[in-house]
Image (tube, rainbow, N blue to C red; front, side, top):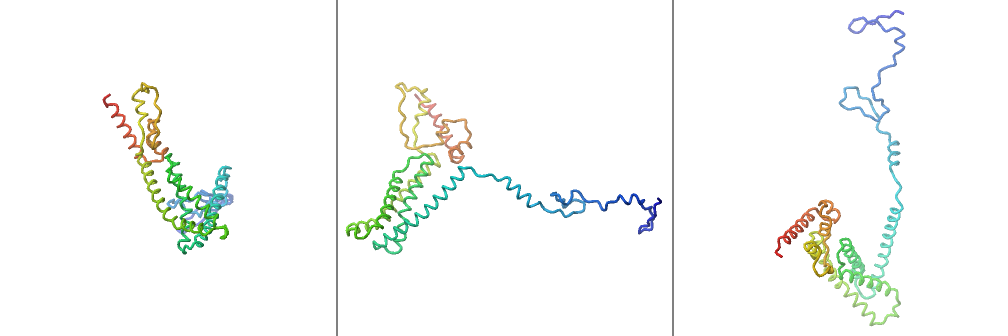
Length: 290
């Protein structure tokens, strides 16, 4: 089979491909990678750009679903308990508010006082509980004022919610006068106790942040005396405060500052301060005259 001649635009003649070779042609060469893949063509690539579709949304959604894990039983119980407790707190607070509001209204409190009085009674319980939680979290002695305010608030809200349901014929005029006097004196008492409680909380927060809590040096004295005082082991004195940073430094002096700060919930600067103070105290005791 003879090849025909082809003439291009410049007038040059070229032999055409044989017919058998022309059958092997498959059309224009397709750029790699193919368009059905997820690899995009680089914008600066000299190769001609090919429209590449984005990632398949169905495949991505299935991959995201495959990474999901069912929550554990403890997690489900904790979330269910939290939701149930939040609902009970909300409903009970609304009902208690309406009861105390009605009691204040029947004892000749005006609109503002009758609306704010329930908040002052139930608010005392909330603030006292938070102070006790802070003390337990940082292993501090619970303030007696917080415990007194907590039980006073509990008794007050229970009494108010119970008295409002009693018929008026059961309550004597003297009892009504006493109830009215207690309701009138409650805001002043709650204000004074709350201010004192805030002052106690501020002192505790500063003590936890700086580590300036009172502590006995019985551990250092025992170390300096070789653990023998000559008259048998002395009973450990009751500590008026607790410095967790100093305690950890004494028990684990080889721990780094970051680990101690994370364990005690303080800053690294506090750990460095307490470590320096502890080293200075030991150096002073080492050079002290016998």
